[in-house]
Image (cartoon, rainbow, N blue to C red; front, side, top):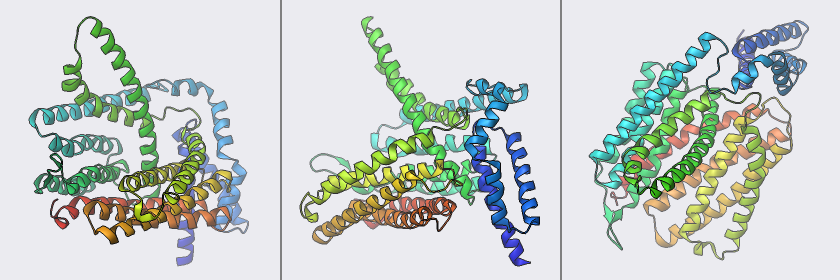
Length: 460
C-alpha cells in the first residue's frame, strides 16, 4: 500500500510539472489547461488499465497529446479571437476579466505610489548618503512584497514570519557601529559595503516567499520566481532605456527655454520613478503579455553560447596573467560578478526549458557553460587562497571565498545532473529541482555576510 501511495505521489508530481509548463503557454487559458489535464488523466487511466505503471503511462499519454508547442499553436488557431486581445495592455476577454485586470493595475499603482512616498520621506529625513543607500531596500522592497502578498493571497502567518526575518537585518545595519576608512579619504568600511551589497539579495529572496503565496516549499513556485526575476530585469531595462531617452529629450527642449529640470528630477521624479518602475515592471511580467511563446527560451538560446565564449576568454586571460598570486583583486571581483551572471543565466535557461523535451544542442552548450564556469571558479579559488595565505584574512576576501565555495557546490552538482540528463540517465526535472532546492543557501549566505561579518571583523 505504501508503494502504491509513493507511485501515486510521483505521478501527481509529474502531472504538476506538466501543468505548470502548459500554464505558461500564453495562448492557453486556465479552462483550457483544466480540459487538457482531464484528457491527460483519462489517457493515463486507460494506459494503466492496460498494464503500464504510472510513470510509463504518463510519458506515453503526454507523447500522444503531442508537443506542447504544437498544442499551443493548435489552441491559438482554435481561439484566434483571443489573440489580439492578449496584446492589449488590459485585455477585455470578458467583462469580469477586464474589471479584474483594471483592479490589479489600480492596486499596482497604489503600491507604487506608496513606495514613492516612502522613498521621498526617507530622502527628506536622511542627510547621510550611506545611511540612505543602506535603507533604500528596506523602504522599496516591502511594497513589492506587499503587492505579491495581495496578489497571491499569502497566509498572514507566513507573512508575519517573513516580515520578522526581514526586520533582523534592518535593525542590524542601522544599529551596528560601522567604522569608516579615512585613507585616502573618508569612506564606508568594508563590512558596511558588504552589508549594503548583500541586503538586497537577502530581501529579494525573502520577498519570493510572498510571490509563492506562502508555498515556499514548492519547487514549481520557486522556479516561477526565478522566471519572474529574469523577466522583471528585462522589463526594467526597457523601461529605464525608454525613460532615459524621454527624459533626455524633454530636458533638452526645456533647456532651450532656460528651464532647469534637475531639481524636479532629483526631488520628485527619481524618488517616485524608480520604485514605480519596479512595481509596473512586476505588473507587466504578471500580466503575461506575450501571445504564444515567452521570450525567455529565445534569450537563453542567444546568450548561452555568448556567455560560453565570454567565460572561455576570461579563463584564458586569468591563466596567462602570470602566477595566481599576482592576479589582482579587481580581476577576482570581476570574475565573481561574471560567475554570478552565468549562474543567473543558467537558472533563467532552466526555467524556460520544456522539461519533457529530450536532450538537445542547447543542453550540451549549458553543460559546457557550467563546466567552463567550474574551471574559472577553480582558478579564482586558487588565486584567493594564495592571496589569503600571503596577506591574511580580511572581510572582503572571506566574503569572496565564501561566495565562490557556495557557487562551487551549486555548479558541481548542476554539472553532474546535466551530464546525466544529456546522456539519458536522469530526467530534466532533477536538474530543475536542484536549482530551486539550492536557492535558500544564497539567502543563508547573504544573511551571514550581513549579520555575522560586521562583528566578526570588528565593524571595520
